[in-house]
Length: 377
Image (cartoon, rainbow, N blue to C red; front, side, top):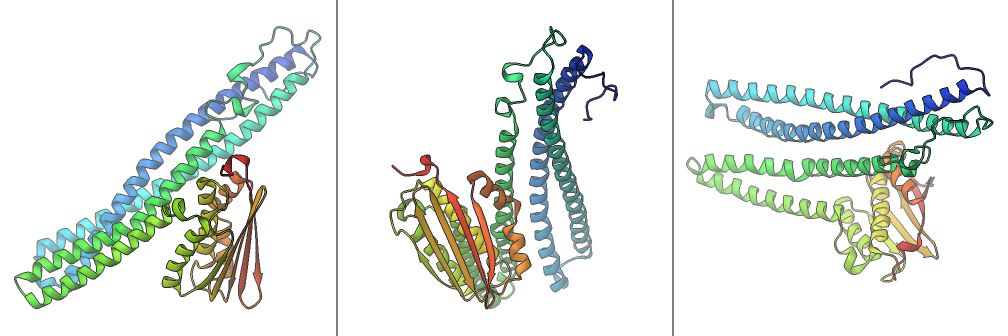
C-alpha cells in the first residue's frame, strides 16, 4: 500500500483540471481504504493461526520442561539416548516457540501500522469529499463523476466493512486472546502437571508402593485445586448466577473468593435485587468492577474494599475505594489505562476517575450512561 500517486503539483484552483484531480485522488483513496480493510482481515486470520500455534508450543514447552526436571532428578531411570532426545526436543520446541512469538509480534505491529494508515485515509477521503462539494458548479465540474450509494465512503456508516466492523472483530479477537491466555495459564498448565504426576505414580507402583500412595494423595490434592481454579475461571468469564440473583449479590460472591485468596475484607452497597437493568448491562457493570479490583490488587493486597453501586435515572455510578493498598501505584494506573478497558469505556460512553487516598488508599469512580434499551422492562 502507498499513498495516492500522481503529480505532486496541483492545477490552479477554480479550474476543471483541479476538480478532476480532486475526484481522481478521492477515488484512489477509496481504493486504498478497500485494500487496507482486506489487508487487516488477512492479518487477523494469520494472527489467529500464529497465536494458536504459540499456545500449542507453550503447552508443549512446559510439558517438556517438566519432563527435563523430572529426568534431572531421576537420571538413573533414563538411558543416554533418552536424555539426548529429551534435551533435543526441548531445545527445538523452545526455538520454534521463540520464532512464532516473534512472528506474532511482527503481525501485531503490522496491524497497528495499517490501522494508523487507514485512519489517515479516512480523514483524507472526508477532506477530498468536502473539497469536491465545495468546488465551483458553473461548468468547471460538469460531467465529472459523483459518488453515490454504497460507494460514498465519506459517510463511514455506509462502508460495507468500515471501522465499526473492524472494531468488533478486534474486540472479539482481544477477548479470545484473553480467554486463551487464561486457559493456558490455568487449566492447561494444571493438566500438564497432572499428567507428569500420574507418570511418576505409574513408575512408582512396581517399585515402591508406599511412595506411590503418597504421590497419589498429592495427585488427588492437585486435581481438587485444579477443579477449584477452573470453577473460578468459569465464574470470571461469565458469572451465570448473575442471571438469577442480580449484580450486587454476584459482586459479593466474587469478593468472597477475593477474601479467600487475598485476605481482603469488603462491603458492597446498592440496590439489592431490583437494579432495573438488563442482564447485558449488569454484566458490563460487573466487568468494570472486576477489572478495577484486579488493577488495585494487581501485585499485592489491601485491607478493605468498599464498593457502592448507585443507579439513578439514565446513569449508574460505580464507586470502588480501597484502603492500605500494597500494589505499586504506577502499576495500578497502568492497568487502569489498559487499552481493553479504555475501549469498553469508550463504547459505553463511560468515564473513569481515579485518585490516591491517604494511608495508601485508592479510589476509582466510573460513571456509565444507561441507554433506554438497557433498562429492564
